[in-house]
Length: 306
Image 1 (cartoon, rainbow, N blue to C red):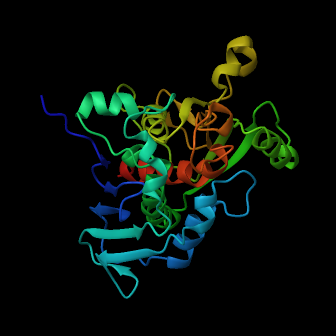
Image 2 (image 1 turned 90 degrees about the vertical axis):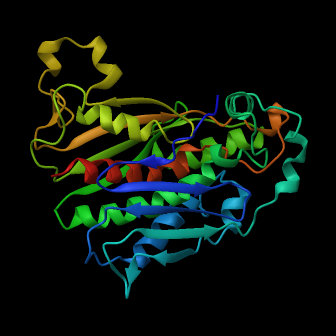
Image 3 (image 1 turned 120 degrees about the horizontal axis):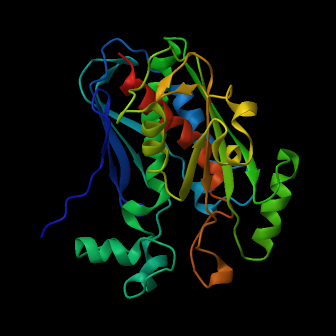
């Protein structure tokens, strides 16, 4: 049986990503985008810089070297969308496939290596191929365009790293990550995202619940292991009479016009020197996941709006 991989997200604003971590390039195609949207290229560059996290503690050395320059292939003229498919690519300038030759006949614990090969009968062993977080750079570009469209409708999306391991003080995040990195280890984190300006009525009451659509999008991000909104899992210890007013911006699967708030947890990367895994890896992947969460949220919302 042949297995076909799903690489497309959304229907109204359809986004297809392509490319492998250590291949020639990664990129994407956006279809269904209205004509006449002025693209803020400086914002796109800034969002990619956020994802690269070059000034952050514990970030992969590769992130510091990749320029992540976007080449716009179609769908844009003089900085304005034409209404035709927008194709773009980001060349992999610091790919090192030779560093992963040892994976030709080995599977990393905690990664998709083995199940990928079992499902498709073949795998790209060069740093995980499509399963690498390198792919998320294309999501950030697509999501940035969606954010610009949403801004015209008065909708803003902002995410923050709110926890690293057990630490909840942002001023101590860098030191916490550095401590794990010194030990050749890694640590996870929690990202919180807020959507402001969303009108009443986004989402459906049964199978198209807003929180379900957001969870679907966010859980597609590498290393994301959990999703909650409103009171979330913490609400299970509190009586309903005390928290029944906390909606998280969603009631019955439909936006209620207040700020939508959700959180997602990212696991520690299993690729660490302490685990005997070679390569260039993040000590805390949640740091660089923040703009990716925003991007997937933007793509979700722009697809749900009338």
